[in-house]
Image (cartoon, rainbow, N blue to C red; front, side, top):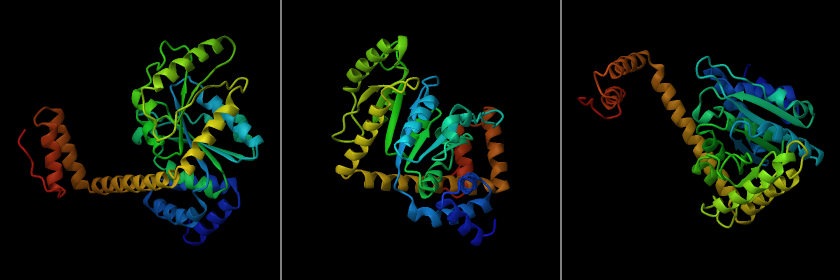
Length: 334
C-alpha cells in the first residue's frame, strides 16, 4: 500500500461504508510490521475527526455465561431500532501455538450476515489482559465507518476485564444463575468495574435461580462503590433464548451514558482513556525498541539463563540488563 494516495483512498472508502475497506483497515492497524504501523497511523489521522461519537460497551463474564449468544440477540434488537452495531470479539490465542479460535462469526452468524452489523474476531495474541493490541484503534475505525454502537467482548479470563473497562463508556458484567453463591467466584475487582450487571439464562427452569442470584447480587453490591459518583449499579435478568430483559438491559446502558453526560463525566473519561492509550503505546514502543538490538537480546538470554540456573537472582539479572541499556542502575550482586 503506497501512502498517502492509497491511505486516503482506503479512508474514503471506509467512511463511505465499504465493509471490505473497513476489514482491510482493521487488518492494517493490527499488523505488527513497522511499515504497516506507519501506514496505520496515517490512516488513523485521516479518520480520527469522524471518530468519538459511538457508545462503547464492554461485555465480560466467565466462560459459559453466554456472552456471544447475548451479544447476537442484543445486536439484532438494536439493528431493528435503526442502529449500526459493531462487535469486536477478542479471541483467546493459544499461548503454545499462537493460534486462535476465531469462531465468533460462526457463533454470531445472524449478526455477522446483517448489512448494518460488523463482527470482527481478533486474536488476543498474548497481549495485556487478552485484549487485541489494537482494539482502541479498531474502535476509532468503526466509528469513522458509521457504527454508532461498538460492543467489545472480552475473553473473560485474566486481566482482560480491566483493560476493556479502560476503553469503554459502560462495562457490563454477565453472571450465571445458581452457581453456588451470589458472586460465584467472580473477583471483587471485576465487580468494582461493573457499571451494569446482568444475570443471564433467566428462562425456563433457570428463572427462579436467576431471580435469586439477582437479589443476592443486589445485596452484595451495596458493599462496593460504583465507579461513578451518583450512579447505582443496576442488577438485571435477561435471556438470549427468548429475548426477555434485553430491552431493559439496553435501557440501563443508555441511562448510564446519560448519567455520564449529565454529570459532565463522559468527556473527561474519554480524555483519560486517550492518555492511557498514549502511555500504553509509548511503553510498547520503548520495549520493542529495546529488544530490537541483538546485543540486548543476547544479554537478556544470558542473564535469563543464569537466573533459571539459580546462579543469580532475578533482581540481579534485571539490574545487569538495565545498567547496560542506560537505566542508570549498576548490576547488583545476588
